Length: 322
Image (cartoon, rainbow, N blue to C red; front, side, top):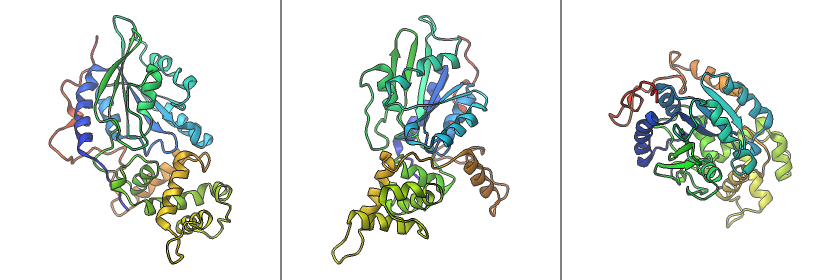
């Protein structure tokens, strides 16, 4: 199953972000700590690199992710030029309180009343950008919801006298290159429900958890996972929860939804769907397919787009010296 989701407002948001990048000093990119690279929008990296803007990469929802995998990702991102990575939960005030100081360290040449630090908060849908904005400003300025793409317009807000925040709508990208990325995004609720089939997403997630966290499945549902596949896991959830259709068959649709909700809410435990190692293995597999010259999504140049607007070549790509 190949999942693609790029509604019209995201195309508009992409254009606006390209135009606004000139007027900011750094990017705060929020990703999901459970799938950091799959939840990185490649357009964001290309836009900020074109403007030579540094990045504070926030791995949000770290309280729901495997801590060992999270540390591996922090080390991975901190080895990249122009990137400072931190793991935190945007729902914890003490964690959010660290962000302004970290941002100042990323762009120490700004942050005064005369030259406020101008930051753009970016990320895919439903990773916690609006929650971060509200927590930083200590008031509700951005709509927060359990559905992806709640925020649809850009807004500019002041954090004290020396910082300016630009909040942007959650953006995916026109083509999700790897099917497993689309399924991980769907499982983590970053994709609209009209673009996926929950039963297929739940089966994919169950297969992945059987490989990496079978003990969490056993602890949550009480069944022995030995010899199971993804379909059997979802059927096991139906059996344990008593989800039956008229006639006695398992209600697979209801069980799939419940299983996905258990993962999304953290009820299954602390889970990471990918690690730097698994990501490298995925890309190696991609390179060894029938098209050996193909590059992975995070490395390739987008040769085709949905329209004629070249978002990588927004006006004046020179570094501002104000």
